[in-house]
Amino acid sequence: MAMTAKQILQDGEGILRLAPTWVPRTFCIPGKRLKLHPSDLYAYGAHRGGIDERWFASCTAADNGPLTLPDEGLSYVVYGDPARPEKRLLKELVGELGADLLGAELQERYGEWPVYSKFFDNQGPLPHHLHHRQEHASLVGRRAKPEAYYFPPQVNNHRGDFGYTFFGLEPGTTPEEVRGCLERWDQGDNGILELSKAYRLQPGTGWDVPAGILHAPGSLCTFEPQWSSDVFAMFQSLVSDVPLDWYMLTKDVPEDKKHDLDYIVSLVDWEANVDPYFKANHFLLPKPVRPLDEMEANGYRDLWVVYGGALFSAKELTVLPGRTVTIQDPGPYGLIVVQGAGQIGRWAVESPAMIRFGQLTNDEFYISAAVAQEGVRIHNPSSTDPMVMLKYFGPGAWK
Image (tube, rainbow, N blue to C red):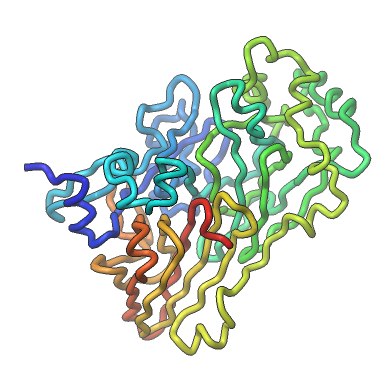
């Protein structure tokens, strides 16, 4: 007899093991830092593009055009006999378990897991683009997509081709200048980056990127918590000498607005983009949860790496060699282990060196609200290697 959702949660003692979720992008070249076997980078077929993203604890479907698979971007829970494991969509379990998994507050307000996170891993820069604010996303039946970045040192053994990100627009830029770039879409490079500024990316730091802000992510491998949406509008017509189709600008624009340049320019949050203090208002340095010396004396370091917003946040937790700790958190979260091996609750965990497409791993989990609040016991048996994990949270975790 198949296990029920409650039995799966009870069997994991409130912690769900997840299978890797791989997502390809036709407009990206993989940076080869996701630990995916080199032979599997085009496992979906070359026509789908290279796999340059791994999504974590995702109940959000990817939007990759007409060839997108029905479960693309969705996470699967792994359960049952280790010799013959079974899988079910995390989204299904969230729907069945409700408050038992999310907690009463998230269940009452959202009735779903409304966030997700990913690694995106590109050899080169992405196009200068934005994610729609709610007023524009709602016109096409979608959600806004605020997001944030953190650059984990463990997955950045190289910087790729362009370790800088363009953010926003230079103060003084006018809507007419941006409109002019759109008018030059089919003339090669439309010059949108000439209106922006690039910042050198630093491993161990991050950025907050609200919806409506133009950004051209650089080539560091990035941990990216975000709201549950895959809307975007690419404002750059040529990237690394590869032209982008007009569809990449207008896929989330109403049919009657797909050639309305004034409407498309209105997607830009103007005040936020031309902010002369952009870095001061969006750059994120890690914030210790408690004084560092106090935490290290107790065997761990717990740092907020994404914070300040009401919708999502993220931490980097390090358990020092040979230590066992119990860590409490305010709500449920997705977790990926990026260094070391040990025990989380009843689960043996490890950060693999190499993953084949379709292979299961022991590095990704979803922690239920009750267990997170009671405290998760984590043991690092190594005498030398720290155990490092990234955790992302939904609404209300950051106070």
